[in-house]
Image (cartoon, rainbow, N blue to C red; front, side, top):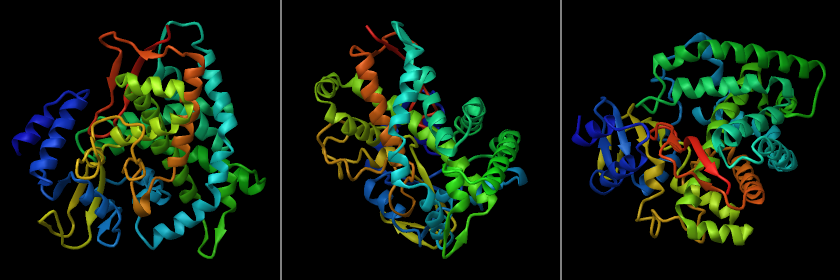
Length: 402
């Protein structure tokens, strides 16, 4: 194990600055770095990460060969559009895209605003509250439940499942789930599948115009989705979508608080709200790294990588690469934001990105309407983070309103 890896493994889970320092050092000195674990490589530079993400013929998204399996979690892979390769990816995405449309997402804006207002009503009059607990954790779960057509009374189930997933997968050193992670999620997976199967059966008997209903009725020349593909996509939307949006919302508030000049600009000109959300995604992408597997021998930054190797691509490093971004560590509301990799790139660009952006815009505007003096508390324990090697974002964010 290299010194850098030894230092990283010993870090506090809350230590995002030290992770950034490690990434910066390797981006400059070791753009492709062999991991202590055989067959795993780290990739740090924007150009290399972007090339890998854009080449599914050479770099596979299917990690099933290295992820432990269990019969009760197998359904999660079937509808997971981010974890399969062409031609199966084309079939699945074309069917899912028939249901999960930009129009469907855009139509959620009034309901997102209403849900946000209801959650903020619960903390009205308080001088301080935990923004994650009060808003950024529950809201994405409620929105996804609403999108799927899940009854309001069952929202606590979705919250529990999302928390179980984060607990099982969010705290380890590895970019891939371990056998222990998989086993920890088995009971939740069984519960989720049984619940979703019942809703799918209801939609087949009595069609409804919600996302589950749209997925059930979606058809192309490639056929239609089977039950486990529908459940797998819904599960991916709940798990990945919840983590992404919760992280984006919290990170946007943190970035603005750390940059008071930019915060003042946004307060004065709300047209800058989308730029604030996007810049937060660039600097603090919800998932700090993505993984691929080499299908054939390839060369990256002068390093020959054999076939069958796992590539850990650090998007949080690529998004701070000075070869690609001017003043890469600065929170700049006026930069060209179209090139960051915070939502991925290419074939597997995040399908939930429009929803995360919409929620970010609605939430930030309503927060500033309700609490013009909003800022992060200066208390010692005001902010706690997820493990930054996996999820970049706060799990606790105490804010003050006066």
